[in-house]
Length: 498
Image 1 (cartoon, rainbow, N blue to C red):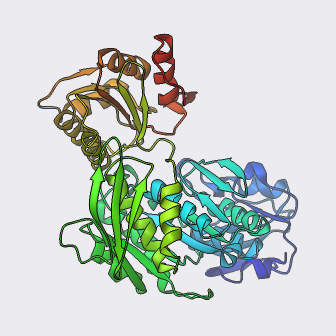
Image 2 (spheres, rainbow, N blue to C red):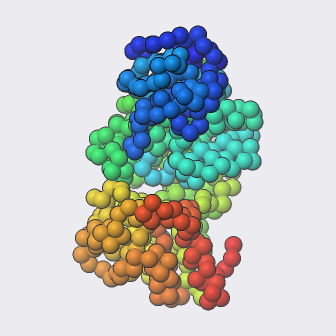
Image 3 (tube, rainbow, N blue to C red):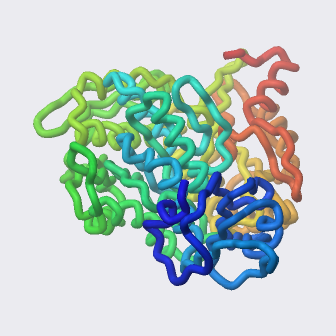
């Protein structure tokens, strides 16, 4: 592709060299540069792409996109394009290089502190029941046309994202449902993507290690909605789906500038989509969905009262896109569950093991409240907090765990480069009452909880959910809460395999 065409949508400050040259590839990782390539010098948190300018030119790069002056070999004819924001530029040139594939898809973006993954799975099920070939991009994996790829980020980097969209288009995918993280929005990974429906699930404390303040975190989330009012090349009106139960709902509604469909659970809510006659127990999770005079009952295969809100969110998207209520109902009821989200396993000695991804104060609170609906004799909770992440949530989660559990085992999550003992001390600061013990080794913590459990108890293992690894120091080792619990119980002849 000719460079001038690739960069036509960039906010260029100045150019050195010819733009009428052929580009055979784009990259932002110096290890992947190819002959006649365009290298985007992205300033990272640990490595600055500008430092590799000379190296990539010597290996075949013929053009660079930069934010500042770089050192390049004087004997090389290289075009240098200066921009203010290299990340934004990467998103723009990647979209152009792959022929703007997202414009050929119905794009649904789901953002919020929690509920993104479950809502996305519900949406995929609804779209498939509506006869639409659907792709799914999120925390657990990237899936489309029978292919499953490992998820390295909730939302991929912009270049990888555009390449995935192109693959979807080539596989005749019609609709893409994707989780949109605050990191992705702040780092311009989704810049230039035209979303048709944006979904806001909720806003609570998380990721303050990255965003630093609640205001900055909120501003990132809002970017998905402020983009909705821009160009519309699709044949149907755009919509914002907003959780009216959340205190920040009006902020998202105002930011969207498009048609809004709200949903909510609170008594007396003025939401467009509501749930009534909720029955939540170990045996069922059922409720009536109401919208514009329509009422239909849904019986989810999943458990957990918080999933009623997720289901309303998915249903609201269905209504926004004029999907028939029977397909919405069928889609919600057809979903057996989501990996690592309120996964319940019953054992041969009458205890239950529940695995969930909850790793923030609000998500842990909602999880344990939902567990109470299952009427356990006791709740025994195993959890920890991630290292090198927001420290302020640690005592909050400790307080919640001891208040809503009968017994708590505090352990490690992904300690990363922090001392596990220091992380645990931060958690203990909030544990002013309640019964608990500390076992830093996560495997031994799970073992201790399972060994103390008796018939009718539920052992909640929170924080990692679907993850099959643990990060200790700089090393990523295989670790699955489900596998560990299964191995411990299998050795005792108590594990029901599923």
